[in-house]
Length: 333
Ligand SMILES: NC(=O)c1ccc[n+]([C@@H]2O[C@H](COP(=O)([O-])OP(=O)(O)OC[C@H]3O[C@@H](n4cnc5c(N)ncnc54)[C@H](O)[C@@H]3O)[C@@H](O)[C@H]2O)c1
Image (tube, rainbow, N blue to C red; front, side):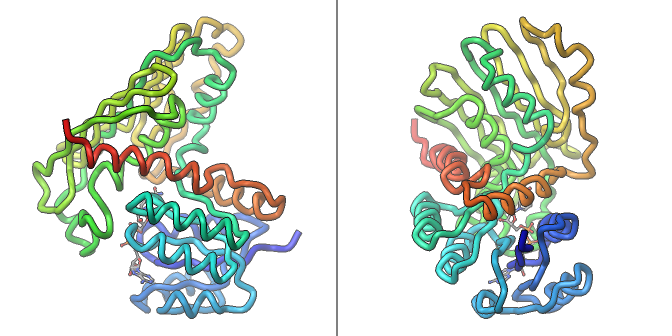
């Protein structure tokens, strides 16, 4: 099988997760990297042995042999960069959120479809073993009738975090705690209980000096009749407290917690007998809230390119959580 040659656009905080996933995958090579701040691109080139570096991503897209790109730039740039990559015939892995408007998300999906390239969105927590187990229980019907669920994200991001780059917390490039941090868990909630029928919520900017929200709450109604609650914040003193996903049904209760939905906190099913003791083996200790899912996500993406199938989290899947967050922003009761 031919190796896929990747390029990374944006060599900041999250890009190393992509670089390491390429390093650890025998089917991938990191061909080139790009950042408008050249020293960042050079640092990535040196550390991960990329062949070349660029400061203009459009020039990088002309690089011979380049098959795919990972887009790790500020969120408001994702759609335009993804569309340019698709037009250049490159497959696209895009960080979350895939765009900041549904129009941009749809344009990106359309460009990838029209140019016959794959598009994957980095909701890497879907690959966490506890999340996969929950999804299998759901698909097997073990919850019975689903009644309700919640996504609780009680995190801490100090003002310094927002001040480290001018795009953070702005409407044009980022959004607030819902669009940036909590969109992962919102994605999981809607993946388990969706599709969503209606949403209403409130947001506030209570502590941080940013344009967008640092606290957000919402209630959801799903098409299957289940109800949902979202509580999101980056103001919890003095550190990250939890990222918990809870799903309730007539015959089952599951709550995943830890700092990044990496632990099974509660696992009770009417048909539990065959798996007593098993949930503990699925707990993951993660070094930070990014977890370990990028490797699995990029492994799946490479297979999807080779097998000419949809990635596990393609553009249409990635769009769902964006729609929920935008609905909360637009919510007027
Ligand atoms: N999946 C996850 O868990 C996860 C975690 C963190 C961040 N993210 C997402 O990844 C994206 C980047 O976040 P980050 O924390 O790494 O940000 P960052 O600010 O640390 O890195 C962004 C990089 O993009 C570069 N850049 C800006 N404009 C560019 C351009 N035109 N061309 C090339 N490079 C350019 C910047 O110089 C910077 O180095 C965001 O969309 C964020 O939401 C996802």
